[in-house]
Image (cartoon, rainbow over all chains, first blue to last red; front, top):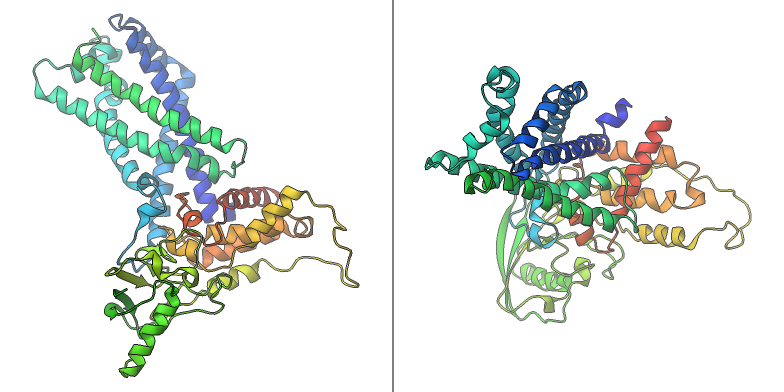
Length: 226
Length: 247
């Protein structure tokens, strides 16, 4: 097993498994947060947040999730280092756009943008929920916090935050557009019958999920969610 | 056709190289890319200059020697074509064409456009032999093989080991080459006996040679002159995972 995990294929397998795990997280996160679109003053949304914040299984999975993110980042760094060593002298002219998609060659850049967003995002919501009693102590609710962060209210800051969120969702979308089907290929799941289906589902997922996420701050900013 | 060529000149493996500009006049559109190089080299020899060193052998697209990175693409702009089968009609009069050697840590430049691809040979030999009964020649079709398997194996065996996959890959990964070599045997009953040790040894050798890892960009498949499919890479990943689980 040690030989497997230190081999190039083994490292890629770790990337694929952690990547697919993070995709399942996106489904849960997106599904729960979409409760905001009930537009019921945050009743369902806050109930969802309450469930996620108190359920012991979710709490445990939160630790696994952070380990998954860290492993995905660590392995990506190791692979990128190794890959840059594999070509010490670059081409003077390289017409890469003729043979591959730009986002498939920019997974590191897109991932870094997502990580930068993640730091801002975790600081705004997760840290406050976990390490202060602002939400758990009942001073405010997650819904109120969301409205506070993204509302227009004439302040320029709300707009800046919304733009950062929307741009981050573009990064996520392109990262998934390659990552989703790439994970299956790495795990050896390539088959004439099912690969077109995997690619179609991956493309749909990569557009729909980031779109739903992006609509949350946009809807609050535009005042569609009251 | 009159062309301007910018060609990588490098005396030997140790000295640094650089791009040198050469004008070439009256190139026929029916010439192959290598014939155009022959014309240029004749001119250089007549001027008492060192001709450009480049690899070539069969000049009919089956030996895989003519490694040239032309205008940023392995074997130039044509699909499923080696450099020797690339014709000058693919270019326009007055074009500037940049020609570089394959760039990879595992493929050191020997001279000018020639690289040492013996890393591939070492990967192949690490795969070892297959077990066959010696004696009289067997009847054809003695071992029943599903047509799909035979076709897929044959498609993988079309790999000529030219190294375009490594050259085109942003990570200089050799996964398409190695997976074609693993697949051509793993798909057939004759190759199944050593399938586990073969994939384990070949992947280990591939990593030792300093090739990068696969990020599934598909550049290899797009640039492969034999149009080997990345399905082979998925097959090798499967083979490798299963072999590791058993060992």
